[in-house]
Structures are given as structure tokens and as C-alpha cells.
Amino acid sequence: MAIRNGGTSVEQHEEEACPQADDGWWSGRLHELWRVADTAQDVTGLADSVYDMLLRMPGVLAVVGTHWSGGLLHYLRSVTVSEPTPSFTEVEQSFADCIPGAPGDDPAVTVHEVSGLDGAMPHVQLLAAAGARSVAECAVLLAQGGWASFMVGTGDRAAADMTLRTRLKQVAEVMMACDRRIMARREDELRQVSDAFLAEASLQMDSSLDLERTVRRVARTAVPAVAEGCVLHLQLSGGLTSVASSHMDAGAQQWLGEVAAEDLWLKNVLQQVVEGEQGLVLQGDELEGGPFGPASSGAGRAVRALSVNPLTARGRALGTLTFLYHRVDIAEAASRFLADLADRAALAIDTSTLYEQRRRHMVSLQRHLLPSELPQVSGVTLSSAYEVGDVSLDVGGDFYDAVPGAQGGVTLLIGDVCGRGAEAAALTGLARHTLRTLLEDDSTPEHALERLNRALIREGTSRFVTALVAVLVPDRAGFSLRYWSAGHPAPLLRREDGAVEELAAHGDLLGVLEDIAYGSGSAHVAPGDALVLFTDGVTEARAADGTFFESCLRDVVAQQGAGEAKGFAERLAAAVVGFRTTGADDVAVLVAQAETEAVA
Picture 1 (cartoon, rainbow, N blue to C red):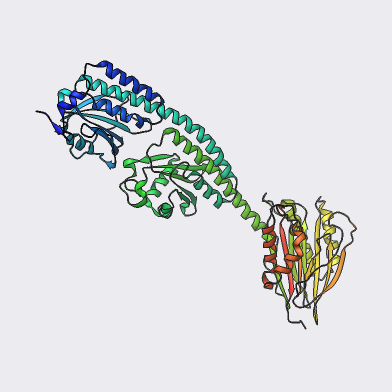
Picture 2 (cartoon, rainbow, N blue to C red; picture 1 turned 135 degrees about the vertical axis):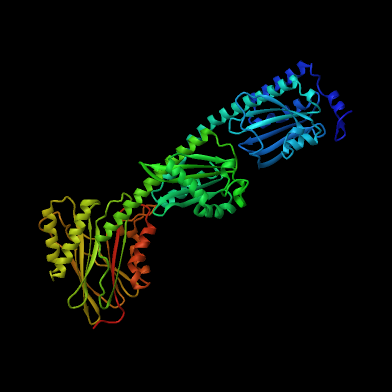
């Protein structure tokens, strides 16, 4: 009695199928399969030919293919006598308790009775629905991980004879050889692409010494070029802390950030990697209990694999670099690539961290060379600003200070030591404290500058110093101004109506000649007027087109002086920083603005 399935009988199928003795038909098809396999770009491209060949064997009712990793069934591909057009079904379901482990290197064919198989398995249901009573199965390892299983369902056990089993094994061997060849070619391509990507990634990560910008670039460089998601954790004072994350799906970005910051399962995995100092890849059942994989909810369901690599540089554990994949094929070559990428990222991050630490130390030292705060002076509003300009992280030589007068008013001083570094910092401290101490002891500005010059000569330094001292003394209509310059840029006087005057003064540099002459001058500072002192980092700042800030300095002083007096210096310094694209000198600004009410 014929078994019927969808209107086609087993006898009708056998009439259409090739006779088992027709080895010429099979060998021709097998030869064609080898030829196609030799040029195939993807092993699934052989599936239609393979399934058609097997379905034409006498007594065959269905051919079912599956893809596994661990206990996770990823998909089914099938053809039946009634439905010869291939059908593809994504499953992504765990059957870890129902299947044996991975097959060996040599594919073997086994024959089962369908009635003796687990009826809850999707492929068993397909075979049973096709009317199959026996099934010949051959499982093969896949080069990218996991394995594939080919099952040929027959109407009875006799149809699963030696010829069918031999031909099924031959097909499996073709598929395995094709898979290995494709993976070898892909690994070679991956090495070439990886080398190019690593070179570009290194350039991107090394292009900034800013720590925050570096960690963001690490995450963004890898998505989606390497994986669908990336998370970066660093060892901070509170332990492993998420500092950057990126996901190719904008809708999943917030979710990934929350998982990276809060999920305990992920933190335990990361800690394991840090302590073991070795990367790991998790997929399939290994993702259970966490926010990733089919058993999870939300955006995490799409994640099929997770790789974590430690970030280690200069013998220090810095953190971890984690990648999320929506695919399963994380090959060994990819793991080596990720380890290399993590090493380069760690070096870039460590360099940025050391740079940031040195920058903070430098800024702290620089601030100690300046007054912690300016004095309160009746009738005058003082403001100051300092902007570090040198990317080499050497301490600059700019300084300023303000000394209140015993009878009211104030003496302002500003200067600049040539060069940068430890010697410049030492001379900066010497110059500022020498001038301040002498002026506090009622020395005249000429005497104070002369004493500083002799001190610099005694030091035997090859560096010179510029300085300017300005004395504001209250009178009935504001302040009278006297100033002395030792080679320092001329100050500006901004009038209340916005007009700007340059107070020309020349003079010799300090620390070069034993006998020097000072430039001096005088002016009147009316209520609302502002005296603006600055170092050459202001005038020599240069825009991209080569224009010096000096060319627009008066206009900017007029404009920025229209605001609140307390922030005048900060606004002027910010304008310089915003203007310059070249010029690495520091910027120091000191402003004294006479209050609008006349001082008695």
C-alpha cells in the first residue's frame, strides 16, 4: 500500500527518482557538486543542489538540514516530495537535554526509526509529517563553529540501504570540504581586512590625547565594522565602570548603556576576564542567566554571541572591551583580531590616561605659580584668566599678580618667562614672588624690576623675562596710572565709551644685561575705564589663514569690555582660544576696571 503525502504517492516518486544502479547519474551530479563547491562563496549555495539530489533517491520522502551550536538549534532547511521547493525556518531554540554532543571530524551515517525519535524536535515533526518512517542522518563539523546535520527520511528502513548511506556521506564530505575552503578564504580575507582596520583604528584612537574622546572612538570605531554592539569598561576607583557604549541600532543604545552600567551577570563575566587576564567568547547556553540570547527579553534577544577581552597596557589592567554579535560565527581568527584590537585600544587609553594625569599635575603646578585669588580693592574690579596653550604639557612661564596699595589703589604686575618646562617654572616663581615681595615692602617699580634683573643675572640662566608693572592711585576723578615696562607687550586702556588706546612703552628684557632701561608712561583711568594687561600668547595667537589675533585685539577688547566687569578677562581669553588654530603659547590676561562711581 502506497504512503501518500500531499497527493503524491511513494510509488510515483520512485518512478521519478533515479534507479539506485544508475551510478552514472549520481557520479555526474556529484562531480557537478564538487565543481560548484570549488567556487561557491557560501556553503548554503550548495543546499538546493544537495537537497534535490538526495530527494531523487528511491524511497526518499524528505530531506531536512539543521544547524546547531551547543544545544541551540538555529534553523531548519527542508524539502519533501510534496513540497520540493526548499523551505527555511529560523528556530533559535535550545534542546541541550535532547541531543548528543558535537560530531567527530569524520562524518558518519546512522539510521533511526522516526517513531523512536523525540517527537518534540522540529526536524522530527517535519520528517513525520512527510510520512517518513526511517531516517538516515549524517552530522558534520563546521569550520566556523557548531555543526550541521543532514537527515534523509524514507518510507521504510530498507530504503535507507548502503547506497543511500554512502551517497549521503559523500554529500556531507563535499559540504564539509566546501565549508573549510570557504572559511580558509574568509580567514585570509579577514586577516587582510583586519590589518587595514587595525591600522585605521590605531590612527583614530591615537589621534587624540583626550581620555573621554579616546574611549568614545574605541567604541564607535568597532561598530558596525566588528560587531553590532560594543561596551568599554575601565577600572576606576569604584571598580569596573562603564565609560562608553555603542550599538548599530539607535533604539538599543540606551538599553545597552543601562545593561553595561547595572547588569550583575555581565559584571561577573567582566571580572572573570580581568582576573584571568584572558579573553573569552560566550554563545548558546553560555549566555543563559544574562541579558543576552534568545532566552532574554527586549533588545538582548538578538544577541547570539558575546566576546570580552581584557585591556592591559604597560603591565596594568585597565578594564575590558566587550563586543555583542547578532551572529554565531566568531572564528578563531576573529578572536585573535579582537585581542589585537583590545591591546591597541588599551595602549591608546593608557596613553590618554597618563596624558590626562600629567595635564592635571601641570595645571595644578601652573596654578600654584599664580595667585589663588585677586585682592578686593576699593573702586576697582579686578579679573584675571589663564589658558594653557602648549600640548607638550610643559609648564609655561606666564605670571601675574596684584598688590593693594597702603593708601588705596593697587599695583598690577604681569610677566612672561621665555620657554617652558621646569627651569621656566622655577624662574616664573622667582620673578613673581620677587616683584610681589618688593612691591609689598614699598619698593618703587623701578627698584623692583632692577632687583629682579640682578637676581636673574645671578642665576646664570639663558632665559629672558618680560615684565610690566602698573600702579593705580585713586584721585578725585578715578585713578592716575603710572606704568613701567621691561620688554613686555604694551597694555590697552578701554574707555567707558568703547574706545581703545594703546599705552606704548618699551624697555629692555630682564635677565640679559646688567644695566637696563625701562619704558614708562602715564595715563588717567576714569570711572568705567578698564586697564587691560596681557602676555604675548594673546597677540601671537594665529588663525587658520595665518592672521594674528593682534590684528583684531582692539576690536575684541572693545566688544568684550561691554559686559560685566568681573568677567572681562575670562571673556577676552576665551575669544583668543576660540580664534587660534596655531600658536601654543599660554594666555594670561589681567584687567582692572574703575568702578563708575568716583572714588574720593
